[in-house]
Length: 138
Image (cartoon, rainbow, N blue to C red; front, side, top):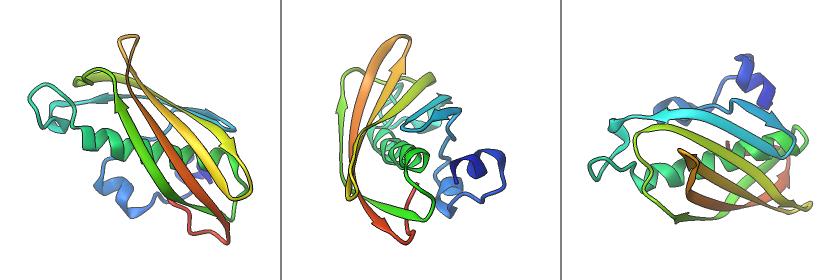
């Protein structure tokens, strides 16, 4: 499914367009990365990217890393999400790396790292509940 999203043969969920969710730029099973750029429209405090946007992307990239690692037809839903803000994330280039830290038949945990100019600005952790029969979010 992840390959289909990347090459355009699978339509992204409706929220992907509405929320302007950036796609993964590379992936391996259990590891997703994205090189993107945030603009001023994503700030609330002048010059600093809105923390809610970062939390949104944390959930998004945790979903993408799940798609890279679980079988098609397996669903998942976010059970918990936390973000630690280490330094202000500024408009400009950002590298986002997401790693599947653990994955059992029922629970998975992903870590999402935001890096800007060589500094980790934020770290998100997402716990996903896994179930059979689709219904996953990305």
